[in-house]
Image (cartoon, rainbow, N blue to C red; front, side):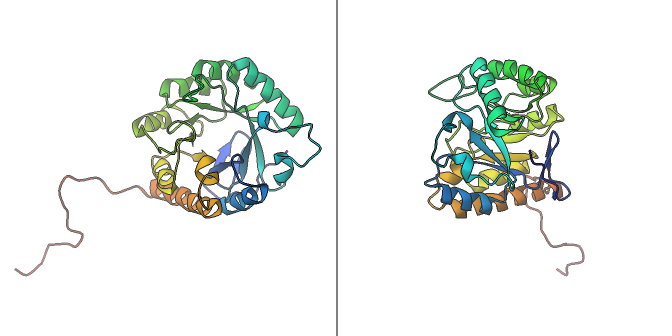
Length: 263
């Protein structure tokens, strides 16, 4: 088990883990392990997520887990592909045994067409996993009430979607993301739907603590360049939030003082 110890001030803390980057990156859909490795490096990420149900743990050939440098990245197994709380619990326990970590990104899918999360199933599984000592990072719809329920259940963070997973539509409901940020004290990680660098910047400007993405990088024409863009956008968006944007105004306001001008 690894904890990042070289984190800079203002970086992301989830449970006992301190991450030197606010960008978490997935490992699916890349054309090759080599492209994935280059993209992870370019992203600057400290944590990578793996769909444990899609890894053949009995394979004699090199697997995705073999391609990830666990001395460099914190491994975050996820329960992608689970449609019931029971399946998610089983997968999380398998991941803990196979990967040697109590970290889990909890996903319980409620609809096979839209892949929208089953919030009730997620909450049910979260309660059980927390009692079993897992550090739970739950993925759910952008519901402020459910965010509070998950925090009360012991989730280490909350991970609302920005838009349907893999859709690249960006943040469809900024207000709900802001409501979630106000509702909980644990970190808020936007997960699913980010399509390009401007989406990442907008998410961070809303004041969320981090972003998790996969398809936006892996499905880009040049995943390594996109990973670099996402790193820069995440950093820029966070800086903009911390700086505090100027107030919006209805009418123009001259940027140069008008007092003392000779008419």
